[in-house]
Image 1 (cartoon, rainbow, N blue to C red):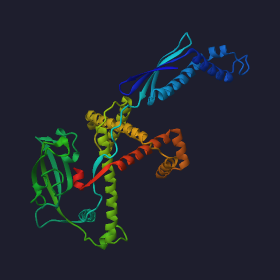
Image 2 (cartoon, rainbow, N blue to C red):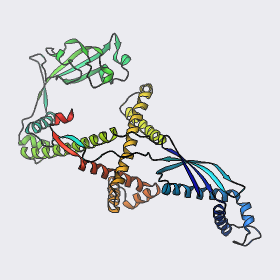
Image 3 (tube, rainbow, N blue to C red):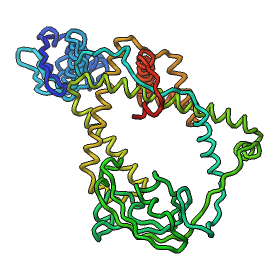
Length: 442
């Protein structure tokens, strides 16, 4: 078999193949023999029908089987001799069973991208310390105390910062409703009723709470807020919003005393010291998970920034569509109207496309690192994960195993575990510097 490879952009390739007459005849003879052994032709005993009759009656089936076998062998040969990493066959075209007995065809393929890995070990990353300070523990305890807080009406003074104001409000921009000017903004930005607002600098919008200082119950107040240029929500930056506010009530938060009685309310049978230890352990676990995420993101960002290569277009498109569906479903679940989703469809597609490109690119990088480091998944690890999935879904392992065998699910689980082990390897080989949590956040 003669194979000529033509590499195309976007990770595609053409295989032009030619099978010599003797090879095509040998393959054809074998296929005809299989048909003859099974064919039931009137007037002939099974297996005794002449080849000429078999070839005439089953011509299309024989040629189809010949083509299928030849394409399979060509793809295998291209993988072995041309070192093509073939993802899938797109189509087989220009197939000809020529008068001279040869068979020729062109096979269009999707191939994995070709690139050389940059340095991926000893990448420098900065992560926050997992140590929990006394101040952080106290802050976490105060957050729990707030869940058990009581609220008393304020009747003998005006509102001050850290009070709770129960308000109705309605916003406008240059005489128009907020929804008209900023259709993608949250509905609560436009108006709300019976809203409990903690009067703090970081509550609601910048400067809003400061203008409520000094109000009493049943007061009304007009508040003007200009969104700063560094505000997290880009679509709000630079806009000036006018709010008409009615104060329905003022509340003062009364926190429970921090003692064993409080600890027992939070978790039955625990003393205050036991509650503190349990909370510290939980915070350390959360911070360790956050730390791993930071290391992973920094390592992958640096590897990605040092690489640029073509990606298979159809894989990126499939991933983009999947992410578009996820975004639309998420927006629907959050109660965003369908017409608003349609209005923002171009932005949704763009965002999904950027995410898909990065995801597909990272997947190929991780696969190549796994190959370079000979990272594999043992049978015990694979079966262990299957058992975990079965337990989580409350499904018998045997039943899940049959489902996975039908759907090629074992391959997906294997690949997922291999990627996880590769990420573990990259984290373990990173050069880590611990910094204060605030510096890591920056």
